[in-house]
Length: 198
Image (cartoon, rainbow, N blue to C red):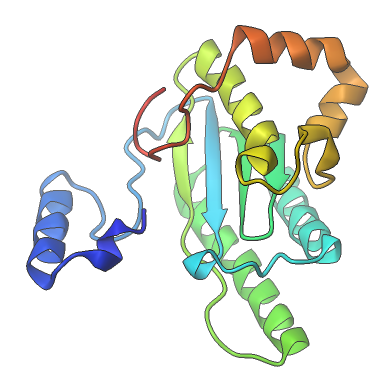
């Protein structure tokens, strides 16, 4: 995702040319599959700066996302909010609507947090999406989301991270269900590249 910044001007021009040739937008992630029943939505803070650095900010973001998605009858099935990015597993979304709403949520929170921190500048990068392609993919994404704080070395167990749906799954389905899901649908190298299929 961030290799583009390190390319020469000629290499950047070639990347953009190839993207346009495929019908993709020049710089933002493409949305090649728009009729899937489920999607993994990922959004990051600009340059991966840790701006979601309090539980209050994580909860503000999560509340806004749930309020917005519920208003459109879009279900958030799994989530994790880390200090510099977040992941959501959702039911089908309308991408023009999603792009507009995420920009609005991010914009309002950026203004508030910049005021609180006494700074100016960009907080968010754009979001990306992955269509869920199979039952295996679906459950691997749930595991990937719940394991994300461990992957980023924020905690040693998914249960130690509060801003995650792992606690809802544990309460509703039980720890045995989560363990069985982990064994049956291991994440392996999922998440190494945003545009490759596990």
